[in-house]
Image (tube, rainbow, N blue to C red; front, side, top):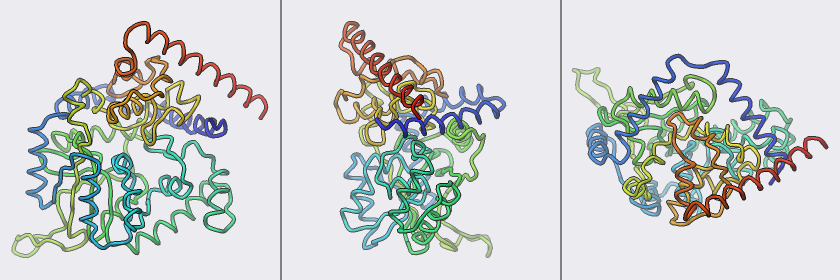
Length: 400
């Protein structure tokens, strides 16, 4: 465990919690109820998914369903053709299928355009939050390591770091012909794709000649209103702001009806949009008693309040699967009882602070325990580990 990273993580998490306390949105309880209703309706609903796909295709969007990880990668490689440079935005699904690694193995340069993800990529380190991937690194540490990469001295300020990384990102965006993004939602009624961001990079990436969207089958919502409601909740829980800077709604390629009210496509970029919907065992989870796990919107609010995560950081994670929810999902999707399940305190702080009230402790108990005696063992073991690292952190603070 890196004590410095954990302390930096706590500082970043405290900042978000302070913003949340200062800016509570009106009607938030009602919004969360609407979100829960939408997730219960949509996750695992094959009829609604089929409706969404039909309407997306009707709008001129090419749609693929990838049953497994490798199938998704093969589809994307086919869509890329001979391209050797791709720019992409933050996407938990592309991380899940390890897309960057696969593309680089095939000789394709992949440039992350989100500032945090680009820093993560350049430093070769693990993320600590789904929307704030380098929250565990101080500006001073980032500057030190980026100075070595870029071969120039960087001041240890967020402004200087963002300036240098931004120039790097923009240079690559200008050279690329194809952009890859994730998506926060797809809607059944309109056949639309919704993406939210604060940096503006998605706007640049999606305006390449070809736009490839990679998301998962559980991101379906009945309509745009339900999807926007989710995005407001996601934004507040992730950053403390009630709405992000940008919300993109895509319902087909660019077109105009200015002449005789007849649609002409391809006025501006993109002239082609491809959507890949990844299953990767989600259908199995929905059918085998773990549907609730797929309700998660990825806001990361559970991590802000998890005592173990705030003590050991992303040691309580597997790859990009962070915290108790992430370890549970990793275990089920890899058909294994991952050892890091033992770290969960089953304290219920994640459930208490989840906008959907997901009972992650109950799911973890179901996966890791064979009965009450084994659960007592895991309960005591996790609390002993947590207590031990709490003492180490306290000593670190006293000596700093």
